Length: 132
Image (spheres, rainbow, N blue to C red):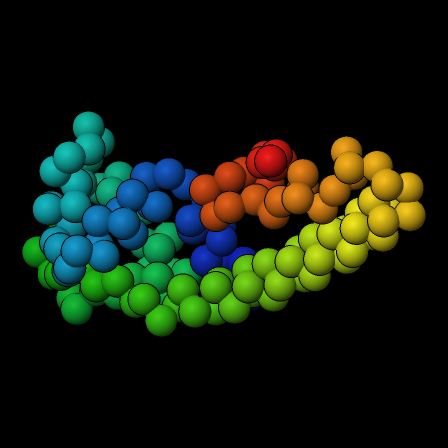
C-alpha cells in the first residue's frame, strides 16, 4: 500500500481524525490523548500506531509518556492529490457554465442561466448545489 492510501485509510476512522485534530494544538502524550475517550489507553495506542504507520504522527519514545507529534507535512501529499481533482471539477463547472450561457443566448430561456448553477462551497457535500 502506498503512503497516500495509508493516509486516507488512517483518516477514515473518526477517532483517528479527532486525534489528528487534537494534535494540531500541540504534542501530547498517549495518556493525555486518551483522557476524553471512554476507551483504554491501549485502544488509543492502537489508533496512534495506524496514524504512525501512515506517517501522520511520530513519537519520540516507545512509552505512553513520550509525546506524540503531528507530522503536518504529510498532509501536503493528500492536499496535492485532492487539489488536482478540485481543479478538474472547477474546469467542468466552467465548461457547464459556458454551455448554459450559450443555450440561454440561443434560446432566450432565462431558466438555463449560468447563475442558477454554482459550484459547491467547501462546506457543501459533493451532491449539494446552491441555486440563485
